[in-house]
Image (cartoon, rainbow, N blue to C red; front, side):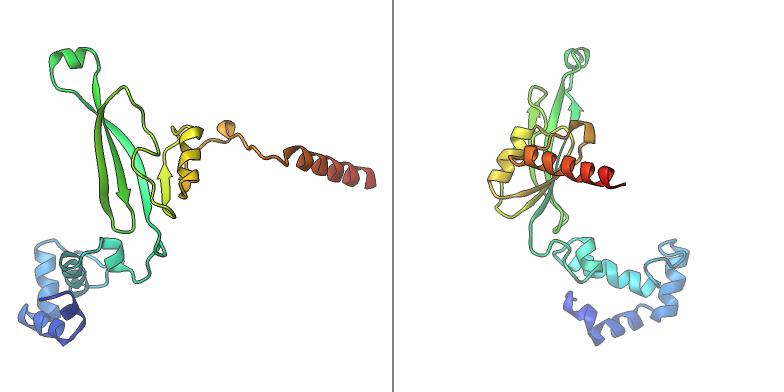
Length: 190
C-alpha cells in the first residue's frame, strides 16, 4: 500500500477487508483506540490518518492539513535544556550538560543537536543561518546574537518582556517631537 492508494478506491477495498466501517468501529471501541469523535469523525478516518502519516514523509500537521503554514520558509524553534552529568562528584558540583536543539517546524523534525558543558549559554546563532528562515527563540537571547541572525538574512521571533525592550531608531528624537507636538495640539484645542 502506498500513500496515494489511501485516496483511491483501494482504500474502500482495504476497509472492506478489515470488516467494513462497522467492524472497524467495534474493534476500535473494544481496543479503546477510538472512544468518541472529536476532530476525527470516525474510526475509519482515524485509520486513514494513521496510515497516511506512517506512509508519508511529512509530519502529522502536514498530513492532516492541506496548506503549508510556513509558505515555503524554514521555521526553526531554537532551544536548550540541561541534563545532570553522571557521577557523585558531578552531582555535588551541580554540573550539567546543555543540549541545544533546532526543531524544523514545517517538517516537524529535529535538524540539529549539540551537546556542550554548562559554561556556554543558550544562543540563537549556534547553527548556521539559512537566508529567509524564521527562527523562534527564548527570552534569554542577547541583542548581539539577535543582530547577527538578522544580518545573516533570517527573521526572528523571541519572547521578551516589555521592561527588557530597547527600541533604537535614528528618528526617535524626531518621533518624540512629533508626538509632543500632537499631544500639545490636542490638549491646547480642548
